[in-house]
Length: 263
Image (cartoon, rainbow, N blue to C red; front, side, top):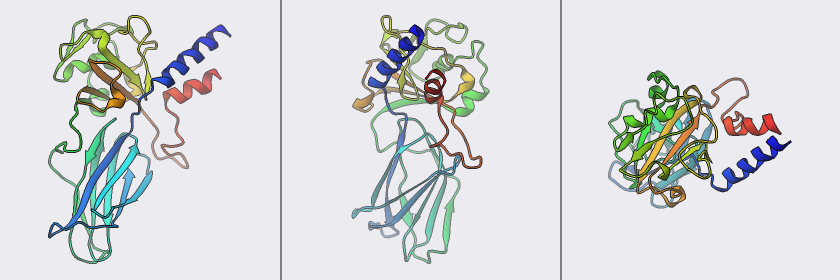
């Protein structure tokens, strides 16, 4: 009973300081002359789950699709009198505002222009400076301790001063942009992992095999992530994929599973 009460207290504290892991895709829709296209139908499909979101452009041709889980998306934009434009392989990371401008060409709606290759995305929607340990890096890079914190030294501005890739424990000794290790905030699916008191170890151990990607917000990030001055490390656990009736909204993440197991 005492153990359950302690866990409940931790979960309540975590909920108070929880941060979102979702991101947004924003952009503008214009025609070939540069004029804004109002009322265009914008559709986003998550590749892993098939979950769909639809929005319409406003009077200036702008659109924002928010509260999107991290992952790969396909964007399609259609409007009567124009060819449908489809952009595949849009990769959205945790807490990211991803720009995705679209230019429509005159033609029939039945005609589709598909873009499958594109250059590196230039961040124009946010001034934040962040680093990303991608899903392929988490899956394929070998770390003796199997803890994702050991992978953060791959990012510019992050220095591991305590051999995090070798130590099999819940502590970290990371210096981000010259700040002390107790100024780093770590969260799993939005729930804070920092232990009260020293603030440089986690209340639970997280296996590398359970993590899909890691996002490190270093400077100029939004105020909702300003809990610590050093950096905000966001761990995103693996979620479900397409299988029968299961979708991303029905597949629980690690934090939700903990609630179901203990209560």
